[in-house]
Image 1 (tube, rainbow, N blue to C red):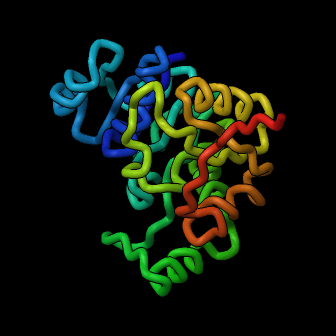
Image 2 (cartoon, rainbow, N blue to C red):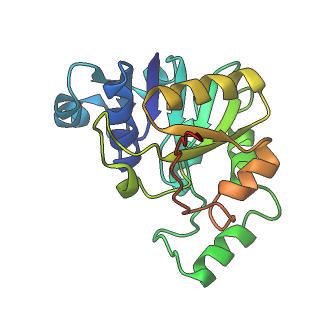
Length: 209
């Protein structure tokens, strides 16, 4: 598959490396423009390229990998109708990410009863939205070897076809996708402040004799 990233920070490069290792292609984009990403894509290798956000949005799957505050501008100017968009954001309020209990509580209160992915869906009308990837720090999945742990990434969404494709994509990398159900219910479990946020799970297959 060809996967586009809107945003070119640690999430994009980390997930991008896992995808490239599984034989996929990635297109990175950022507000700085494609030329600013030349060194980054060179480091990722020939399966990576830089483009505009419109070019990234043309890919089979698009991953929103920006800061929460940058999401509205990043999603503007694209016809999202029918496109598979993965919400990888966390709804941190303010310029600095306050991960204290009080800071997380303020961020969740600012959502006014909605999940962060429902808000992202409203910013990208027509998108087949799937919530995934943001449930853990990227530092936890820096092993890119074929023998890496089968770390669980949660997946939520209302479009079954889109969700199935994202599950297939994640599983292809050697990581493991775990379906939490709908965008509202599953999204609430994995988003910032949810019971499955910042929880590291590994899939282990046990043979019972």
